[in-house]
Image: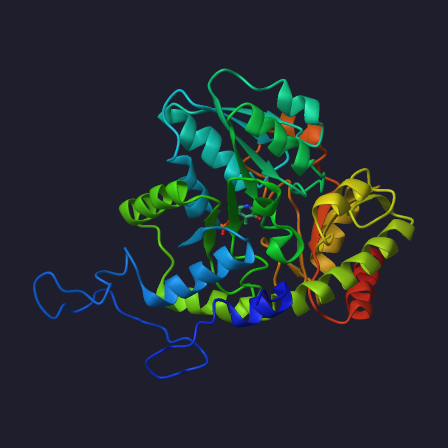
Length: 380
Ligand SMILES: *Cc1c(COP(=O)(O)O)cnc(C)c1O
């Protein structure tokens, strides 16, 4: 019987410990495993290659994303860096230009030195993606909604174009999670995650995931994971499992709060523009509903007067001024100096990541308390 996603986030891959029946799957805090004799193995040899607790969270992610397999890494960046090892010097990738700053830094300052090349384009305009295809293009790397401008890229059209050109589609699904968006079901080849964000959900654990749609790519990622070794530790695997169990209730509440806060911001005299795909006047509002079942809980907004930014960041009390997103606690981020500091100023200016832009990761608190905190911060 196929369970709904609300049930699958709780029960994962039916992961009871077969030895004790423990409902919470144990943390196999071990580096290595004893062999009864030569040529004999329990199936576990060494925790870089495989660990039972990590396997549980990997199988759960594969299940939630409708992939053939998933692999857990020590951070989102470790997951993305490992995926890039699928490519060879001379290969070219077309990448969303409005993306996580750390991904931009990895591509430009690390991978380029190893012979990969990248075209950064506004992937919310399909033609930009199509006209960037070269004879050596091997993949599209897309974030939708984009970070931090919340632009929506057309997954159906991009995946269709990729298939025509025998190009792989890689989607960073961190912002919506499989609860709201499952790119592999739409035909994408690879999904990557910063599990640090909504999947873990408590601002307490770094993690990353790669989920694939075919066994051959899965075997290669498994080989790279084991060879490079940036694997997720047993305790951290358990923390992500524990976080995942409440993914559906957290996201529903966070999205509910986000919508009300976005509407409140939109009415505010000192706010210039609100970027949230759940607002009916957002340019991607109709498109996102064709490929996702929700809008998520990330809002960006620009204020009319740049001096307000410092006042808001100094004055918030409930909301924390901190990098990261997706947890139960509301966080406010200044992308220009934090998440997107690695992106050159000319690109940031083109995108709108300027001195007046703030990004809000909406938590599960009472929404009136979050709004009251913003209100007092605006008025300080
Ligand atoms: C945070 C983030 C990453 C990087 O993940 P880490 O877990 O911080 O290494 C990648 N992509 C997106 C969209 C992110 O928000």
